[in-house]
Image 1: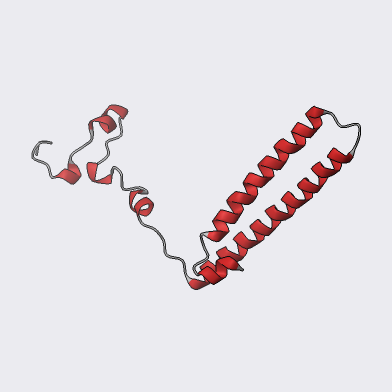
Image 2: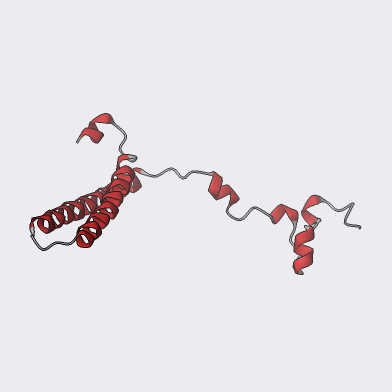
Length: 119
């Protein structure tokens, strides 16, 4: 049987022949392609766990943001602060703020009702 008359699952990809390991065309793209296209549906227990975890992450990020804000405000009150120290504190505050925003958005996307989002 020649390659031309072979069924598709037995025909080979040219690139795999060059590499020395023949791979059937039917196998190319199967690894991960279906799972990447298919979205998993969470169970109620899984949703509750994910909500709880993301809520804890949000609270932790918020506490970090508040603590860093207070430390930057204390830096402003000192008379011997340099501009570089203040800029470094503000840059850290921006990074913490971005982390909080990401944590809040991750938590907010799990909330289903408007009343959950308002609380």
